[in-house]
Length: 369
Image 1 (cartoon, rainbow, N blue to C red):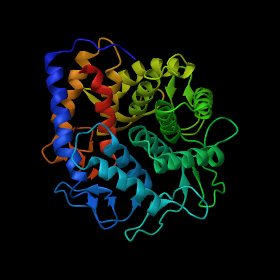
Image 2: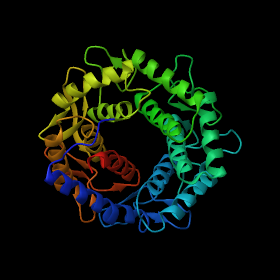
Image 3: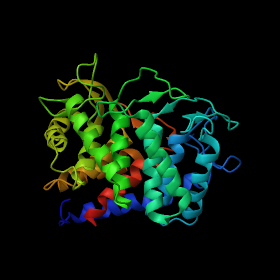
């Protein structure tokens, strides 16, 4: 982890405004209009007028992300009570008492909707519970964390060190194979677990996962982390995920000198060169650097920001990105989720999952304070 360094005065000012906007304009949305008090669940998204979108589902992953949000270092009245409620709602609404694990989603009435078991959901349950347990040290939180880790190890793990992306309700094989994004969030969850306790089994699983990713997902020429295993048809990479991986690996003493870290460090420059244009972080490119999807997403900018905070000599880029975040994505009513190639807002709803990215970004930017 790099040492604190002098920053441009405007950088400090912009960062303070970002923190203030998050605390005063974004987090309160999920304490007020974004909260379904009847089911004790966050709505999936709010529209530009802060009205919940018509409810089609609630996802366990979204609840876990909100659990992380309300147990993070935000000084919000009622945050501790909200975190405790979210943990119990996760168990009450999504836990599969018959087969174990957690359903992907429930419907508007609170009944199981998509009953599949996916790694992405379970990774976020591990991540949120590990983070929350580090704060409260309560037995219910620890037992949920341990149950989620056990499910991941016993149900999702493959012989090659990777993990299945999705399984059926009864854990039968759906032929999904491994995908990059769930593996990344599982690595994030393992790292969070190791931050709050000594866990040799988790440490070994993390090292094996990173070794398997290096073998099966890294494009060798540029070091890019691909979205599907190497050799898959129509593969691609996402600059936001290169930056997210860089942050996770570079801030971990365990992983900082690993082959995967070396690959992602090489990929960083390539992702910047081809995937960051006029301060815009583009969504998807092929391995030759051709843009597949030029959409700008706020989560990708957040990941780029916290990755830049780790890189010496990046204060100018950091300032540029903070200015772009404030001027293009943040507004009095909250935030813009997506912009198109011309910079026009292309998605007007505000998902309950996005504050997680902004919270982890602000956590990563603490080193600039």
